[in-house]
Length: 491
Image (cartoon, rainbow, N blue to C red; front, side):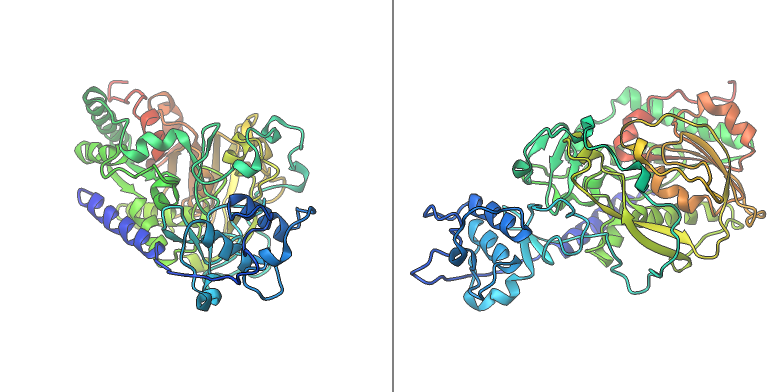
């Protein structure tokens, strides 16, 4: 694991370089018409761009200059004209001969509410204010011909039709005007990025390279991890750790101007702590960076949410399972080809919730279903009142998943098809939502507990009879993770 940081940096750099390209353009206009002056005020500004976006989306019914809006001069006002206008405003040099190529580029502003995860929300590329050209990412349909997207029932829908949120809730009281939601804006702990991405403002310190653990906490965490591993071993278990990176760690170039990812950050410090403790772990940054390099247009995180989706969840699952399989070769590991993948609306939009547009912004996410049907059944769970967006999580009422909902804090699955596989106890945070669909079908029994405290849950862990103990922690929760008391052999 000591060379993981170098591998991570190389792969992240490769992913970013593959996503950023340079496309030079220039354009000219007839002298009699000021192309781009949609509102006829004698200048070409963002006001023209906003008006044109509304015209194209059908949400503007006022007067505007049709001639000036038809920048491509093809007798139609459409996305081609919008793309050309955006280029003009940011100062790009658009050549008249390059009009066809300009259909492939747009800016980072999202003018429509269903937008960010849709393949057609933007052109193939988008331009940032400082001149970077980024790949448009999406998750509303397959970008991989090898995926099976045939018509079958998915594992569970992300948003139940009976759970559509009320338009009158606090989560639908706007904290900012829609026209102001542009890259660089910060509102109610939400940073608006490019390509529709919204980022958690509380993650900025860990992103830029601040908020390191003190020497006292560093040393205490080494002891915590080592004593937890020793305790697990003394009770017949092997202890592992997996780290799920923040969205802005994986999509750093989609952050707005003024935010630069630090070369050495808290996640790197935590990996050094893990190295020193001797606990086996997997840092999932490199695997997700590699996936981005292979398929730049594949969206791995929900754009209006802080969490990863099941595309990233599957990648994390395989990395975790490859680590565990070295010690437990009888564990079942599923390939991607074994899953049916559907795309459907998701309730996971916590960033849209914070800014008061939860119902307005819509997003689609992948759902993986094991085609063989050899799935686990939920055998125990503790009902819990949901909070925030989790109150809209679908609750399964039939089949093996009856009683399951993403809002659950403590639950157990058992897969009767995997009787030769070991059992696992997972200490998790909200990253579990994208991991559980995979982990539950790789073990005989799998317990999930939304907590980092091994100490306060040691009796429950022992009662589970698990062979494996793992902590799956999101990068933004690393500081919370280290604040829990260590388990010692004398407890």
